Image (cartoon, rainbow, N blue to C red; front, side, top):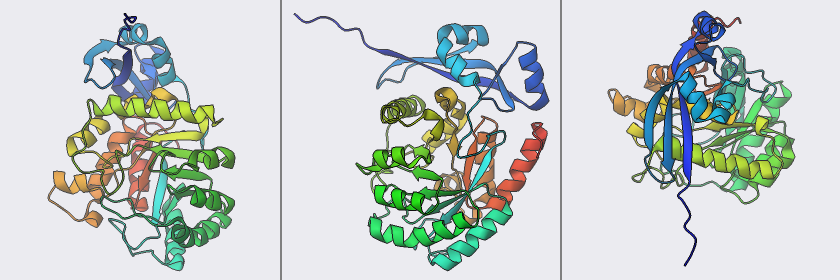
Length: 356
């Protein structure tokens, strides 16, 4: 007769009652709120979740004292300031500008497929206010077919090399280890992988030795299958479990957690109600002590929730999504329309008391 093993119960905390700017500072000083991730936000309440893995879990709103008692280590992780990432101090949200050197990306496929046009666009994006240039050579839209690493490298390396040599902080958007390796050698500072370094057996090793900053995104399945009826027990908790496992695995390879940002992957293996839940509960992802990256740019759920606009007419919806992110403390937004994002960030940052 075997020994009975009690089911493992996992605890989660979602900061609620978020306050920004001078009011946040006053609330923290008065002891009625806690700072969130070292930024201009504070939280005055929380929501607790307890569940066994694979179950929906039990949610309960609590005050700060109850939140601290429920999970002291989580409360501490949420409040701690974030370390610099990719050379940035994270005092204000960063703008990551997208450069797709592809013929088939969902919103701008073919616009910058030639290296020369991609480089010119990269310079324009920098001038418009991007902090980071994210260069990709393989579409990961729903249904997209994979691109061989050699072809992907041929597309992106001239762009990475030229923009990096011009002084840009360049991110390489790839799931192929060989492309990561070559791009870092060409000057990329950041590896941005939609598979969270699981899509290629050599990715984690290459990322570890590169010294580059890393962005891990969650995707259910792959681009060809991810939108075929994705299901979750609780989308936020399931993703928190996923990132906890990935971070633990990468730390065992010697990757300092301070090098890593986490991205919930809006639209990647999620239905609209999953995307909306994740936007509402983005503050939960600060539990890891890592920067949080958010990408809503031109995504199809915006059109479905509005009037069915095509990708390039979803700028207002994109900005609304990123505004939700700002109000929940995200440190990085990934955008196609950089000038508009820069302006939106400028107004939000000024209202939050952040100086240029």
